[in-house]
Image 1: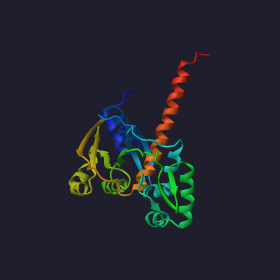
Image 2: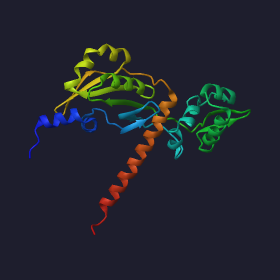
Image 3: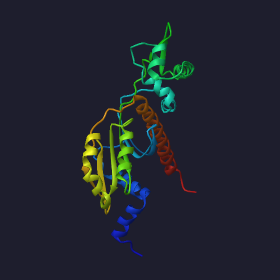
Length: 246
């Protein structure tokens, strides 16, 4: 039995996951800028964003396995107050990170063992000279069927780690959000509607500086892990495709 176009639209409007699936496919197919990664349900301590488009520059250098450490909030909080040349005293790291002395000691040991930082006497630290943290731009998308207020609230939270944030809703229910567009403008949140597999940008998001560097670093770590896993899977699939049939 043939599916009518109206049936597809109704499906968007009745199931949030279908809305997000479709929008993710749209991003993969029609983006003018190549994504390094499209990640579902990315959690950077600001709620789980439905879809996050991550753009990673190529000029970075990290020790092997560093993404596992950076993706955890504790180590990320310490890295967020470290610099390549400026030495940070232990007491200042405690004050700036907001962590306890024992927790800072534990994470410093972990970062030293991973060659992410280096130690100077007496008890001061910098980023390791060989470490170049990736420059990553995040655009977080929050999909909602009806509740634009909830979508806006969550989209604002994502600015804790992302430079851009937008909501995605079915066109049939976007009217209420557009009637309150000033709330989105004030907070720099974009508005996108979906209709019959077409997408319309009603308001472009404003670029934001992530509110917390540590949350942004967590996102970087998780993105690098995702990209590495994707590369491993792609390499495995390519190898298997060359194997003779059984």
